[in-house]
Image (cartoon, rainbow, N blue to C red; front, top):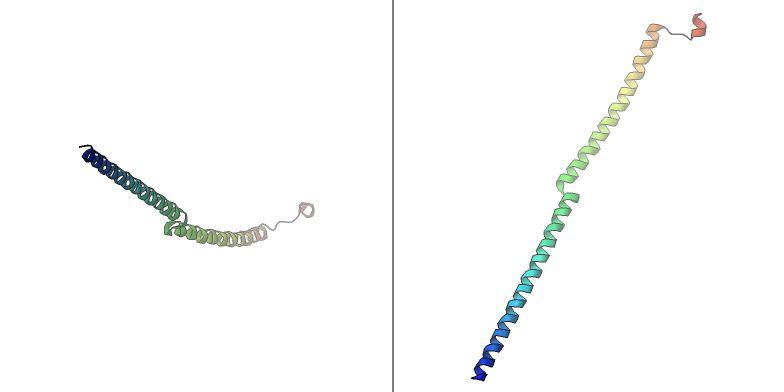
Length: 96
């Protein structure tokens, strides 16, 4: 009878070891999947298509604004020249 109990104990130990190793494997797989998903999420936020689109859009907008600034400076200089010509301004020492 003790032989039967010993065999039963051995089978329970084997079953417990298999269950423990299965749980351990599932845990490691879940951790690996979690790390991969978090890595993909962070990578997409930093280097994804949306981020690249935003960066390129902002760069082109910056170039357009710089061009507009130069055009407006030139236009302002023309208007000031025309304004002073219309007013025929001279230094105050000459006016007196």
